[in-house]
Length: 333
Image (cartoon, rainbow, N blue to C red; front, side):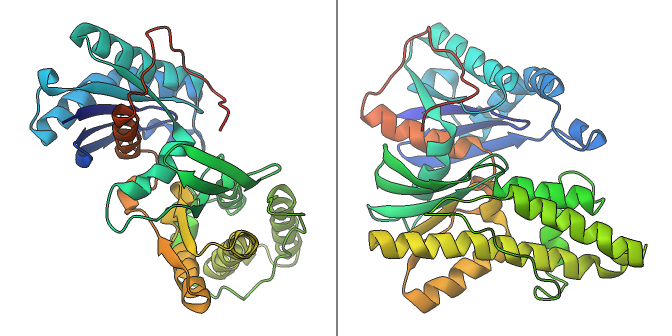
């Protein structure tokens, strides 16, 4: 029997979840809207808002799960990677909470947790499986052999897929966060209206830096001929960019599935909420006979539910950490 309190504070959302014997019974997320004024996350502001949100978010999670502090068996928290100031708030609270109650501490790698989000709900993937993990800061293909036996077999050499979405949104003068808005406009446009070249990167690795730059030059060129180009073609531009990014991701994933002879395929991370990627994965799975796994929307973006399920499996393995644990902006996978 275990009741895990989990805290996620790696970026700009404060999230707290409760995992009761492997079942998520609360997953509360306090969003920060202040960053919309600046077109991106301001680390110092993020950490200050985390300080304001952490106590009421914990209180709400306990209430939603109908448990008390005395019911908690252990505290799981994101150790990294992420913004150091934001991580520090979550780690400090977790350490204090565990120390006051005399219960174990469990550190969780944020990227491991994205993958383990697949073990919250049914159906759950069978080991080994491949997981395409795509977020604002990471793009990876991971060979998952067990809950904590994972190997990165492909990753971005520069920008991540999420950055390509966000930077494109900025070029198109869409408000922050722009990734979901590109998805929204893309659903109304023609994905083959404009063609963007796929980066030729060896092996299973990715690169989105040149792709992002090609979009910038394309828009500049079109605007010289028609200053209203973006306004008149916004849906088609978004659809074409989204289609191109999704094809880049899926082509590498197909290559990995063939190379490792695996048909258990999962996606995770914030970009896994993208409708184009989800639809593309379903179409590819139908063609190639894959068994695919996609987390519920609430477990795609940064959330404590995924930290909680990772904490649950670490609790079963008695994988605890001491009070001298510190947050890490960068962590080995």
